[in-house]
Length: 232
Image 1 (cartoon, rainbow, N blue to C red):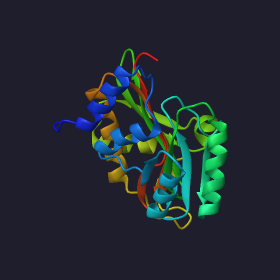
Image 2: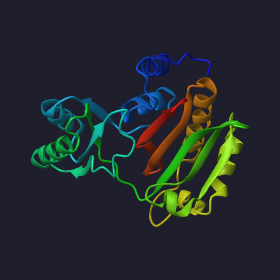
Image 3: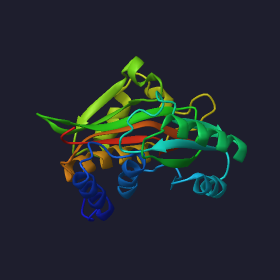
Image 4: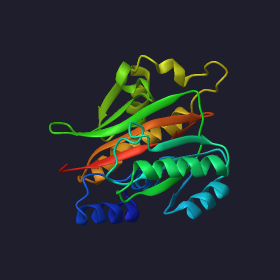
């Protein structure tokens, strides 16, 4: 991109210095945000007081997650508490995650609880032959089960992005569907194009996984993200 992505460079340099093989969810989404990919409202907290303050500022319901570059799969480890409606439930979720991460150095990510009837996935893989390739498909729990995805090598045009959307079998969910509005395809196209730009701008990034990307109304919002670095 024409504009220097200072925060992205800072995060990647710190990860390289620290010997990280991947970024934390918070760091990953900082990079996405700097490239104008919409991400969920969230705050990184160190302790229960900061967690409570963040939840109050964001507004209930919230989601609470363990956050560390050492954690790749939070759901399987029981490191996520969803749809927390009050401070009592927040404390319970915090204590549970704290027990499960005993002995680990973790922060806590407090997020707005985003709900939507449609979940998508998008990402980037660095292919030895074709270079950075952008992926798009159905997300959430159906990603691995259905493998309904399409790919394009970067850089992408808007036409490329729109074609990718139509190539998946479940493309009809992007239209007005069961009372839900039509997806903002222009905004979704920009997200795919910018993922390609991240891959082209930063060779240190090997993979990006945004899953789920929830459709809030008509707008895409990255709720979870993981960036894997070259050399893992």
